[in-house]
Length: 120
Image (cartoon, rainbow, N blue to C red):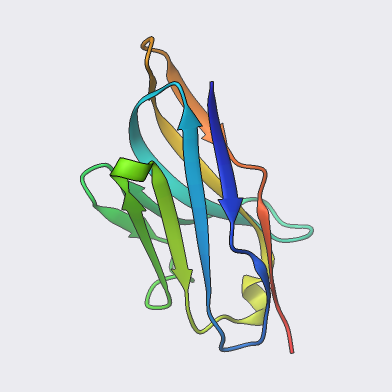
């Protein structure tokens, strides 16, 4: 079993910044990909950014130039630094991790989500 716990969400004014964290724990042998997704009310969940074990990253067009994803492999933790936040960034942000457990099973896990609200 793999658990993901997010933190760092909250209320911020337009133009402000937030840093999200997500720590993975449990029977982890490897984490190949960690990422952030978000879901706004009435919309489907969408990719924000992912980072692979080697450090390569992909971003949604809406996140490029404003958000930065990073990870600490020793701590099994992924971060999302969000700058220049806009009201349209308001959503529940979910952490995702994919890899293998210590007994060789694949996992594709999700955190419970953290609310980010951008409003004046």
